[in-house]
Length: 89
Image (tube, rainbow, N blue to C red; front, side, top):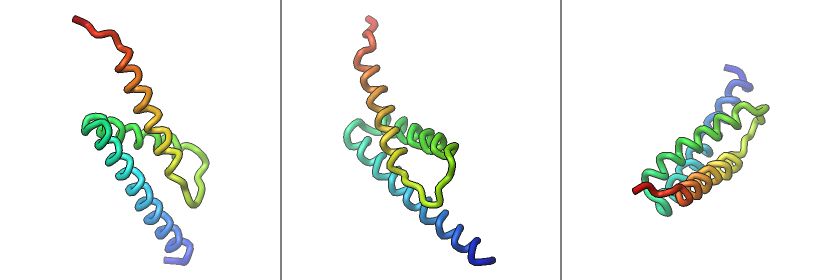
């Protein structure tokens, strides 16, 4: 294995660790504030946002913060829509 492959593996491992930490913190916050069901949905949305970010040109070092900003925006939209949904009797 050459130095470039080793460096690439280290970057991948570091990015994976940062993404896991970011997602874990996000899930913990949503669970605390809104419960486990909203946390489950929000985790899926975080992963969806991550996939969307993957379609953009790659950088060697990636910031996961934009993903974590986009996911709560979805949560807020979902909670606002639920609040304004008519209640059927």
